[in-house]
Length: 389
Image 1 (cartoon, rainbow, N blue to C red):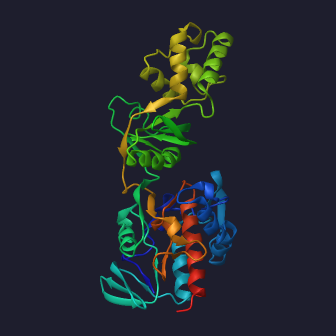
Image 2 (cartoon, one colour):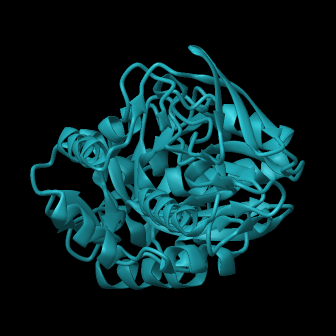
Image 3 (cartoon, rainbow, N blue to C red):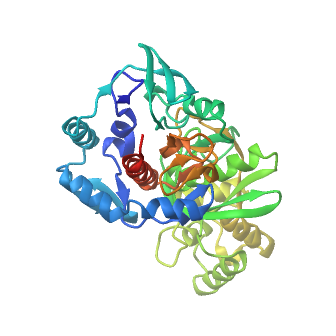
């Protein structure tokens, strides 16, 4: 029996990947995830691999194709097709899907569990918590799974939004001027005065702050630093992989080889430039008070070094995030070391199984969180099938 709190199942599948459903990724390993011990994540992922996932969906009539960064989408580019295939297979397997049956309480009994639902009480031998986290609450993920798990004895690692856009409230910030512009960059997350992690990818400037894969991947780390009470901050490098010294050297070389080149041109996408979009180059020089029309060869040393610093370590005045309503996943959740990775059964409460986002596991953008859902669910299904009730 499958109890679905929403009137229509699969809301998150339908909205995922821009309504195309990024089913998985060509390569998924434990290093693509954060949260609980990676050794446990690794073992669960091995229980149902990417290859097995692709084959499973192929058997359901959903063939996948690869897009940049290894993302795998259905050939139809329709998330509805993925959901419909899963629902058809569930029906064919004899699953009794009860929609609009929200569970309000779970209690342990001597021989199983007693459930209170919006349609009355139920008794069962075992329970699988596949409730999701707190992200996209309109889809039905309201965090109830954490309450159920806690009442049954589990430890809950404090949650925060994950893969969520970041807000900047500085009215003079260049995000407003650059709204809609995207480019490659590198974000450094500073916690307690030290770089905790560096991530690269596409950064999208918006009217409220920053988004795109890069900002989404960095968001959980900034939020965890804030939650822990540390001074968390973000800096952006417009020249991914380059140091202050290397950029300063490149600016000196450009000034010597192209003495009549203005600063904006030296930073921009033209031949010999650093490759920044022209609008970004212009906005950055304005922010630090340098006239982009100034010839690079005539730029004072102190200004050149200020420019090199801004290019490699520009502080983003992040004020917060857009919250769970816009988050693609939840960071935190049920402590992973309280789960048996061979079966997904609770080590705290026998016959209770936990899968997916309710656990303290969150992956980077690109189909990784779906793979965690598929893998953990398959391991739990195998564990249930082998249990004697």
